[in-house]
Length: 306
Image 1 (tube, rainbow, N blue to C red):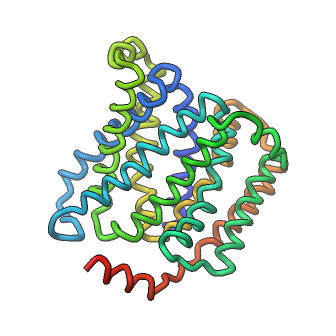
Image 2: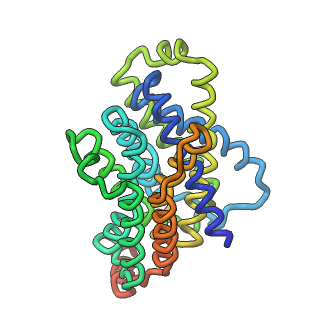
């Protein structure tokens, strides 16, 4: 039950994050948004890391190459692609496209990490995506019209998530989750900062002019909550439930975005939403089956690393 509770909480946070992204893009730009959300998330987590008395799980030097890889593919690059997408498509469309993450996670696991998925897992992934289609009233054509920036960049972002989920599950499971989250966010902040200065040399001056109560609320909501606390929840789900289960959160994000619209904007909840809710949760349940690792591939990899 703890895993499902964390999954629902994460979906609520990330469902609202797309709204905050819209606000920050207009004032901070694409890469400035990445810089702000990563830095704000790290600022929240680093003090917690120092206050924790429990040591990290694994003694010895940190696997910096693996941590940097996750920072690039789970924060810096996909968040830049998502922000870029939302300059062309709506936040709701971005959230729906983000639901392709579990499918791409499974494909990445199968193709790159030799993960074998059973029929129930594949069925759960497909069923979850059908739930998203129900929420959309099967109006797929309305989303897949446009240029590459928007649709294509969101699919690339989902592919980044899929790769990083499998990668961290494989190589970083023994690293303390606070350490991994904080350091990967700092890597993402570095990528965002470099991108912001390359695209907008007067980035800080523009940022100072943009500060107002709404901007501050967006920074707290997207950075501290959506990137810091939510990032921590996501790694917890990967470690305890597996990469496939963790990325099924993207099935729920479009749903929570609609729920936020009902609560904040008094939008009606349709029959499609209720049917989609049932189908999505069934898909999440079926997809929550432990994958079988190809042991022979693991042994081969270990011999190469030795």
